[in-house]
Image (tube, rainbow, N blue to C red; front, side, top):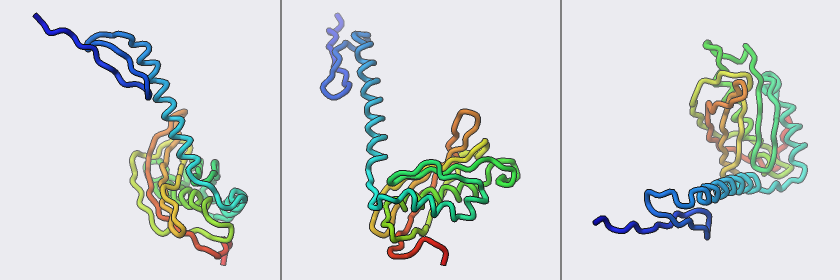
Length: 201
């Protein structure tokens, strides 16, 4: 005679348990709906946490940074634009041009590195005082896939914000049709230059 089947508790969101027996489909709808709600809520909370983790000390940071970006000759050469900017994060986009490709017709890795570096720099700069400037100390970039598409996108965020050094990460995606392909990731160290003008010397 086989042993009796013991009910088990399946964990869902905090405080919600669905009782069922191993190998049975007792109350699957309730379990799946609760699990979906839990996953979506966790994703939303994670997104909000990531984007509200930092507060800019300079209320006018956006105009200051957009002015700085407009003075970058390299960004003009690439046709890049500062698409998104907020405390601790930035997004830069560059459209495809034949002049920006390597021998296979993909975006050159140098373009990926350039916009990722600037995105990290400006993500960090949002957390710096108004009377400061910004410079990259170092970065490392891993190429993950060929950057073949119509537009290159670098999304950067600050991981750790110190008084002098900010540690940032940037993910580079290439837009191909309606899909984005993750093609590179950069880890960068950005320096705050206190009391130094951001203009040309």
